[in-house]
Length: 269
Image (cartoon, rainbow, N blue to C red; front, side):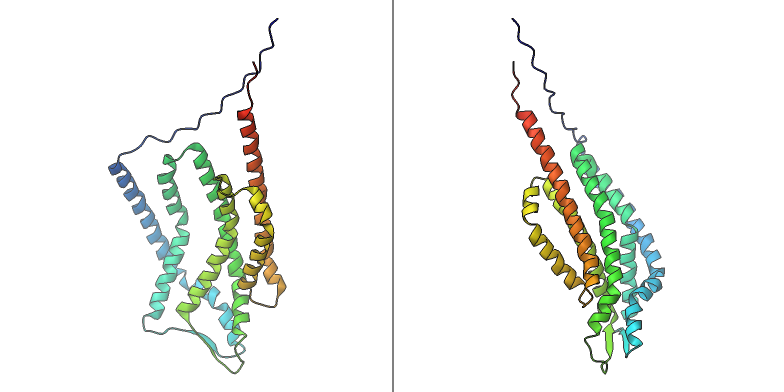
């Protein structure tokens, strides 16, 4: 009497190989070409940023104009070349932002051929999620910046003058906007750590209370005012993003556990 044949277990699909290695000289030549293209794009966009200086300054100067309606307030330059230096810095930052699609594409075109198919999928997925989240965070920081300046300047007496160094003021605005943008990207970092096997979904679930406290503290520091709604504008999206990162990590861990059970299942004769 013959026993029924056990169902065949499909072997795990082999990972797509990396591209064929290139000589070091070819790598350097390609890196040089891509760096030159990125530099040209940066120079062109920085030139555009030079002409966008006035609209950018009008946007950032708006809180000072509002404060000046109540008491003496102004932006000042501490040297003859201060205005030129500030305009050059604004142009470079604007050029870096405007040219980011070019230099990011050049960077990925140089790096991706050396990765496996799974690694490429992880990298492209992470960047595809991080870029819009960073933009949303920067937009949130830019939206909250005038309110923050108004509240912080309000600690000065009405008899005092608010005279601010223009360079320091622009640096403060840039730090607030970039910090808020990076805060919105942190959930993507958590997902990447989970995909790399460094952080598990169980660890993220156990740490949710600490995460919420950290989010609330960051939101309170980013919106130093008695207006609770401003804090919620930052805290609620960040909490939702943490929950989304936890859900993605849980799905990934569950799929990994299911795959390991399938691979370890013995084949019955």
